[in-house]
Length: 84
Image (cartoon, rainbow, N blue to C red; front, side, top):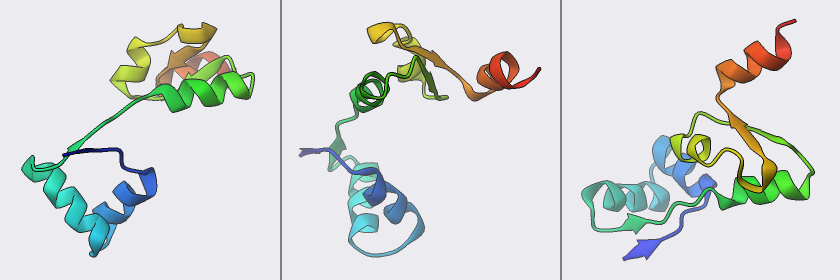
């Protein structure tokens, strides 16, 4: 079975017992496959007129430039924009 998990379900499953934890156990066992997409971050950036996403996620970093939005890892953001 393939599912999309809300971030809250993942965080709850990592830190607490209960249904979210059971779901993550099934994901880790391979019985449930999660569908992951980075579209939401680009959608948020475009809607908010942001030109930059800060993330260490390899998929996002590889997609840098999509919709004219640059993706930088946290260290590069700090070095390029906050150190002055």
